[in-house]
Length: 112
Length: 104
Image 1 (cartoon, chains in turn red, brown):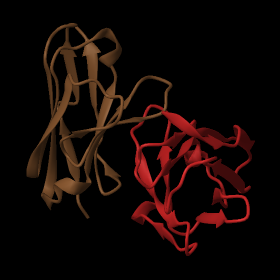
Image 2 (spheres, chains in turn green, red; image 1 turned 45 degrees about the horizontal axis):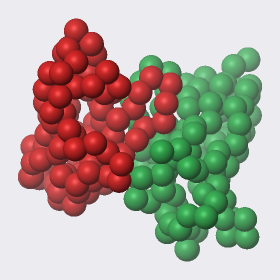
Image 3 (cartoon, chains in turn red, cyan; image 1 turned 45 degrees about the vertical axis):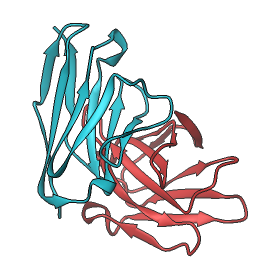
């Protein structure tokens, strides 16, 4: 079930940054996961953020250019990708800690 | 790092048939964190099974999960037309590469 609300599609040039938001109105959670799905490919877990402490954890392939954050004032999780590359073109999903609620996905396209 | 190997890559079956999907972990894992997801084309993944054998709310009982240690199985008892999709197993966040169940 899609019950988290993500921001809309983005078209960016190589080298730019993008920030994707994810809001879970009315739901409780202690962590938010981020998942990437490149065109025609499978699901890749990028990591998660502890929404109580703001501490992010990144999986091996997503260190360096990827930044998770959480704004407690608006109960919104964010994924920022810096130094965008063509290979970052993908749909990015957020999913609650229990993996039972997902966002609708945000398509990020990187093209010159 | 645990690697999940799903087999087969593609399963070609007819509606009404039984589907058996395998997920093998590179080392023994806790069943507590083994889940299965369904993703239809162009849609968001949906949680089917958690803790290896527990159906998520609203999931039909034709879906069942089993296994322990390194070997886990998702069984779809009688395929319905809406069950043709890609299925992923997941262990503590890490996903397998998926099994596509297609109409024969």
